[in-house]
Amino acid sequence: MTYEEYLDEVTTLITEKYKLSDAAAIKLVVKAQDAEFFVEHDEKEAMRTIDRAHQDAKTLYLASQKK
Image 1 (cartoon, rainbow, N blue to C red):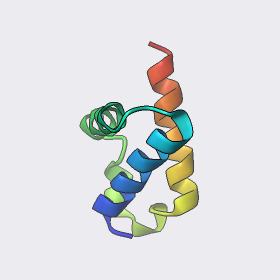
Image 2 (cartoon, one colour):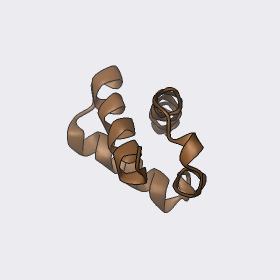
Image 3 (cartoon, rainbow, N blue to C red):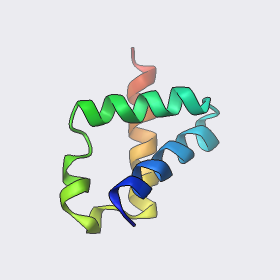
Image 4 (cartoon, rainbow, N blue to C red):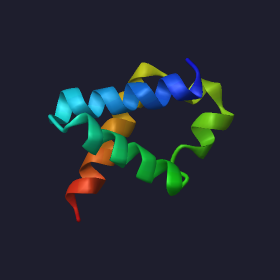
C-alpha cells in the first residue's frame, strides 16, 4: 500500500479499535508524523502492512493515554 493509504489505515484502526472520533484519530496520526514516527514507513514499503498498521495504531493510542 502507499504511504498515504497506510496512514489512512492506521487512522481507521484507531477509530474502530479504540472508539475515538475521526478527528481525534487524525490528530494522533498527524502528531506522530510531526514527531517523525512514520519516516521509516515512508522510506520502506515493506513496513506498510496490515499487521504493522495494527501495531502502530496500538502504539499511538497507548502513548496518547499516558498524557
